[in-house]
Length: 213
Image (cartoon, rainbow, N blue to C red; front, side, top):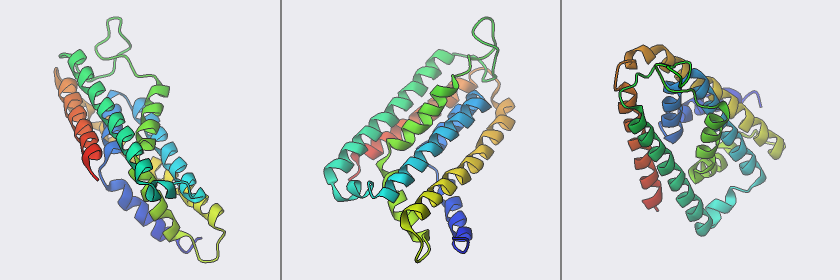
């Protein structure tokens, strides 16, 4: 296991740096607050681990074998992405010209009320689990790094856990970086424009997932 770990971590890094819906959602929620961003990361990585468990048990093979099952998951994922995009556009409309800075709450605050931690966690988890590509990728990715002769199920579960923990650390740098740059966006109208951009990207990704074969 130790002999394959460096190559596995290098592959995890290449996977993490590839842009996708999760990256967009993590950045969007990190702009609301560091807490929201980190709970989104934790939810997303819970989804990564769950897909890894499914791959270890062979359940994700059903998505590969059944076109109908994959299409159902694909359409569900598209609906979830578009739903998150619409939420972002609605948030942009509600934001008006408020600055992006966090405030103490609705009563006379300068910024929006912080999003509950469970909602940020749920959004990250739901977005990841609703993407059938994540399941197929886990099925194709993890077995490559199972050492010859190693027990398949324990090795796959260990790799899934390492993958999730690694990405928690990686995406934590996103949350930290966004927090450091937040002052650049703390001018009137900035939050509205950022919500519009993230909403448009999420809707575009959802439409792409829906129409692709």
